[in-house]
Image (cartoon, rainbow, N blue to C red):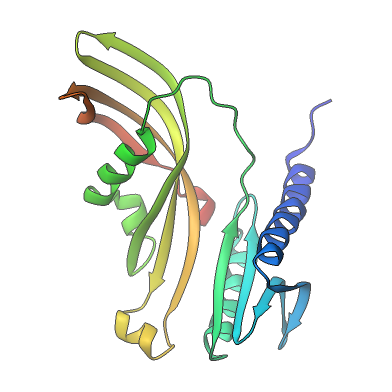
Length: 209
């Protein structure tokens, strides 16, 4: 029996909240789940001393309604003073087959220097935070060159408004993750792998539409 996506996403959302709650609890935070916050409801609120972190968990496709609700909650949280607002992206674990040492770091450096248009267009300022879940689908060796095809996930911070808007609490920052595919060539130079050519690097941001 194949599990339908809507049921999988429902329980993935619940499992992500449970995992986040455990992680923050182990750091000494007091946790509230499905907590009312003004006229809104947050997936999770973590409190410790004078710090309050409001966390929304995203799983599956971001609908316009959900996107609007997250923005409204984020705007409300930004006005509460010593509050932080985070959006956590729930993704299922993947079993890796082929591996290349430091591939995440190599891809991170590449994207940092070559911001994909798909990501740049999402916000006023898009910042690359992490490359993760890299799966290598194919490796072809030719002398000192490695032709590599695969996929991964890029985590970004989306800043809406200028830095001045952020200082005045009139802007908004959220985090998101998007899958990408790549085809590139690696060369071993002085016993260190380097990217020498990128044939394809495409980010799927359709979940943000």
